Amino acid sequence: MRRLLGFILLTAMVQAAVAQRLLNLDSCRALALRNNKQLGMSRIKQEVAANVRKSARTKYLPRLTALGGYEYTSKEISLLNDEQKAALSSLGTNMAGGIQGSIGSYVQLLPPALQQQLGADLNQLAGLLNMGGQGIVDAFRSDTRNMFAGAVMVTQPVFMGGAIVAMNRMADMGEQLAANSAEARRQTTLYNIDKAYWQVVSLRHKQNMAQGYLELVKKLDSDVQKMIKEGVATRSEGLSVSVKVNEAEMTLMKVNDGLTLSKMLLCQLCGLPANEQLTLVDEETENLTAAELVPQVDMEQVAEHRPELKMLQNVVDMSKQTTNILKAGNLPQVLLTGGYMVSNPNLYNGFEKKFAGVWNVGVMVRVPIWNWGDVAYKVRASKGATAIAALQRDEAREMIELQVSQSAFKMSEANKKLELAKVSTERAEENLRTANLGFREGVISSTTVMEAQTAWLQAQSQKIDAEIDVKLSQVELEKSMGVLQ
Figure 1 (cartoon, rainbow, N blue to C red):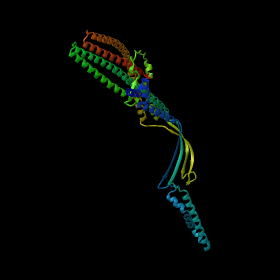
Figure 2: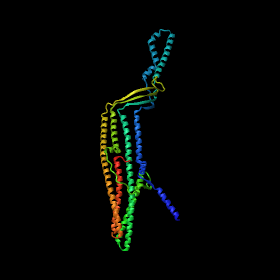
Figure 3: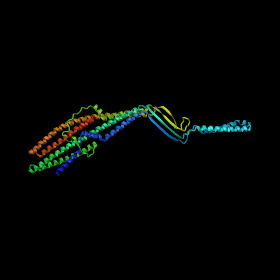
Figure 4: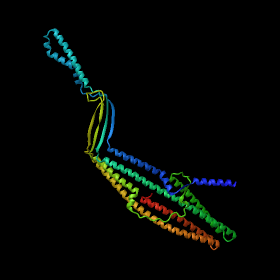
């Protein structure tokens, strides 16, 4: 039975160990970079900017366009008016009547047979002329109530006032802006994951410290209770120690709660389930860090590395190109055109009722003459926006310089606090050792021991805080310098 229970316990321990995910700082960073939603959006924005840049490049190339259409009109185009149509349709009749009126007196002198023959010939001629006139009228009919048209056109920009060049430069800068934004988001993500990681490590060390403190006060409470039974200690001393035990238990509970919440935050930043069981490599490390040397700060290099300053510079450059695009509104534009057009009916062989077309090549020039100063006002407004962007960039540079200086100062102070905390911890441990020894010898009261224990707890807590401050101040300085990797 004991062997079975031992096997079950061992199996449970192995499963618990397997369920625990062991992570170090680098693995947490890798998980955060892979799963962070903001970084995913930044990568998509980079792809969008790259496609915008590719689209801008196509503005240099010729465009091929096909057009087609159909139109029905209630009336057709007529080249002859109604009077002309009527005159042409009765051309023979009018001519025969005029001839008869001119030679009528002479015709009366002819024999009847000749008069009849001449009248028949005139009527026949009038009919032929009427048919010819009607043919002319029909030939001039356009029959354009049903119109079909189509065209294939090629346009090649030659000079657009510099607008295409400025547009392409803006697209390049937009791609750089997206890349700098992604880098800024990456460094922010690393900074947040480092803070969460060291927060968990800090609380884990404080948990161990709180447990150790609880064991100390419990042992003291046990010793005092024994002394009360022996009559060498008072009940008041026992109650004082019991209060300390309760305070230690409350402190441990608060640390446990804080550790659980901090691990939830770390899991969220890493893209893991909130209830994932994590174990960090640095949780059991005795000394978290040694004093770090403060690097020499070169503000010129900081300006080159900080993605935020690069982004503001991109905004300034893009604003300048916007001004160039607006200036193009006052400059001439030249286009080469060419293509093939077809229509039905067509005008290339009379009004033929079939498709026919023609090739064409041309040059189009657009020259703005007067727009009431519209473009000039827009250019002035754009220059004002550029000036504002430049001032924002300069202000941000000053703030970043201040941030770097403050971060370097914080790191230097954190190193000093760490050294002081180490000395304080050594003294607190020695004080606690001598207090426990004196208590066992009966020359020191329980109150003095509790004071020594409290001093040890504070010293240990300050040492952990100082170690974490060194880590965080180093990360903050690297981020402020734009070199967080």
